[in-house]
Image (cartoon, rainbow, N blue to C red; front, side, top):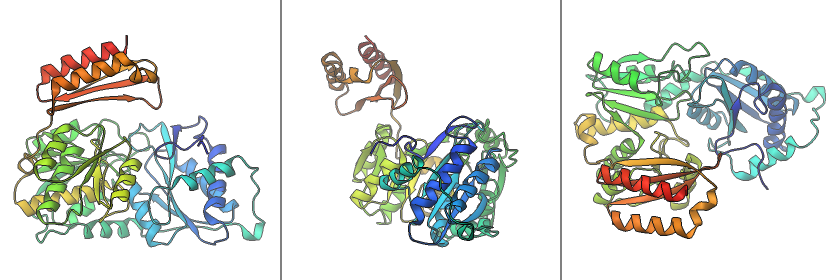
Amino acid sequence: MAREFFGTDGIRGRVGEYPINTEFVLKLGWAAGKAFAGAESGQILIGKDTRLSGYMLESALQAGITSAGVDVRLLGPMPTPAIAYLTRTFHGLAGVVISASHNPFYDNGIKFFSSEGQKLPDRIEETIEHYLGEPMVTVPPEQTGKVSRITDAAGRYIEFCKSRYRAPAGLEGLRIVVDCAHGATYHIAPSVLSELGADVVAIGVEPDGLNINKDVGSTNPDALKLAVKERRADLGIALDGDGDRVVMVDHHGDLVDGDELLYIIARHRHDRRKLAGGVVGTVMSNFGLERALQNLDIPFHRSPVGDRYVMADLVERGWILGGESSGHILCLDQSSTGDGIVSALQVLNAIRYFERPLDEIKSGMSKYPQRMINVSCDKRRVDEPSVIDAVSRIEGRLGDAGRVLLRPSGTEPVVRVMVEGEDEALVNQLCEDLAAVVGA
């Protein structure tokens, strides 16, 4: 069954425009209640990030869910992975996140977690879409769901995060700048780090409903780089608006992206014989990550872009570690979904284990120069003989020291042309040559 509303990460769009308006979200809440409850009684947990529109969408969702006869537990502003965790611990039928992640405040979205705190399987999303096409019929008045608030949600999640830090020594002696993007981690991440002993400098912790991700956070790390150098910190941690992504900054103010963080975590676990298989990246993961893992005899597999695909490959292989360059990292022995705070703690575990600063423990991986050009054309161009021949020629020039990727966009008539290799000048030239062939 083709899905009309659900994308790779729930339903997302501009607030006030279909489908992110109150009328649709009310019906979505009812459809979700019908899909999750079935013959069961239970509760659905709802959390949100700090967008102003979260109030409106939360009210519409809870009205829809309760009209289907299902109870609602409100969490308030909480990171996406916290909602996954609390859904499991409260034995919820499902968890709902109101967030547009790293997008600006005028966007918002709805995504769901299963009772196990994982992304929904296709069959559940298809069931919700089925009910969205049905007339909305509320339950009899005596069966209407109730709404209550979980008042200690933040404290529960803080303790969970702290339990994911396993190094014998605490974080005493480390000055850490944490950038919460004026988002859902603003009242969580600083407490986790300070309670573990770090000297914490917090930025991006003054949400006003409109400033989420604005000039801060994992997609805008310049503020963090500056703060790390000004405060002479040992490192910086940048989260995104809903707290499922993380990038870091070393004491020089240099960015450490998701590929490098994934390498550090993998190296630490491999050294302790705790890796349990290999690592899943994506087709966009830097070639340097693949090479660095090869040097450690760690298997590496590339999935399509999107954390749900990384998750699917991890489950299929029985592995526990994967992620994306953006900083969405999955440590399945620590959390059921991507968790920026937990991922950062895994890196801090490695820093304490190797007794080396962040810039030194990432040095085993050298990022390869990468160039990407978006070419406006039909996606079918990638299968044309002239393009296939051009790709083959360029791959021959690169040998085993680089790679070529043609990736049609899923949302616009664009083909992303990417070339990676050791020589930056050659990479740039080859990418431009290939883009010219694709766009011809």
